[in-house]
Length: 242
Length: 214
Figure 1 (tube, helix red, strand yellow):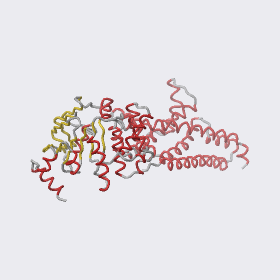
Figure 2 (cartoon, chains in turn green, cyan; figure 1 turned 120 degrees about the vertical axis):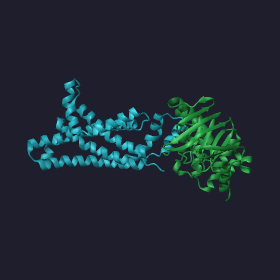
Figure 3 (spheres, one colour; figure 1 turned 90 degrees about the vertical axis):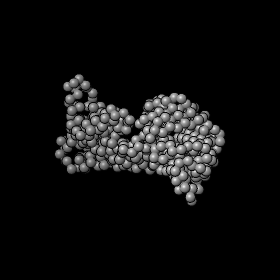
Figure 4 (cartoon, helix red, strand yellow; figure 1 turned 30 degrees about the vertical axis):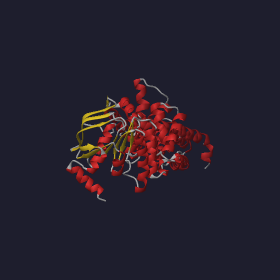
């Protein structure tokens, strides 16, 4: 479904990604973890070209990622993205946030888009807030709305870039519940997160990154029980010690 | 005082001309400004350059020079339009440069994530700009746009210099006949003040209505 080969990304003198290879199969849930600055968010953002890689190739469904323009827009429509800071459109209601892209990009009739959107809002547990503006919702509710907005495009795959990092602790659970539900239904997901519990419970595969490289990857049970590399052991010791 | 009442029709006609000129120039300036601001935010370097050139050229030559150039220069190269039309177009294009800069600051004030979210959903650059960025950008610059609206109204007085009989020119004509400058020009000034007060009121209401919760 997603094939990444030799992906390299530099920001000025800093190299964020050094020749990363990654494959994500259809229906697979890949959780990317690693210390901050390891390049995991950059990898996630390269997958739908919010960042342009300097070298390497990305194929989605066998098709190379288009460079710019309408072809790229079409591809992005098929790959949902959820951001750390939600990024709901502030000037539109929750419902309008969900219907904007289906109506404007896919040409879905408004009534049909609204019906689908209301169903999705019910599913993520905020059906009562459809008419509110994003600023009137809590962080957890906003993030669930953002997930619903991505789902409204009926994407083939979903990218999550630290979806719970900006949330108050008591709201993390409600967002992870929605994501767990999605994973169970067979959605292809790439999740960048610091939630080790989620990685352990939901991931088909854990990818550990450090210094712009994939250091190791494997099933969560193996990875958390017996990490192969020193860096992963080090990292886990730090994040799991509390 | 009766110098004013005796010449009410002249003042009325001048005021009407000023209002028409202001409204049309403002509408044009808004359109030009939004288009040029969009150019300056475009991902294509040539478009950004064109937007920048527009602002630099228009802003760095005085409006009076533009008006004289257009009114007396354009017929030389075979372009003839009425005095009123020429004044509307010149003032609209000139003020458009200022509107563009205000709108651009509004675009810069919209969080980057808004555009990223729009693009991640498959909206093209133009769609993101039109449906997500500009609606939020314009709401944050209502007050500066209100100021520019007032500036536009004041600048219409320059059209008097190329022969358009708007409020200032009308007052001047009355004064040539009556030689009572204080009453006549204070009256003209009060008319301008009333127009700008009205504009301030409207922009204040718009600002309160359109404010975005964040």
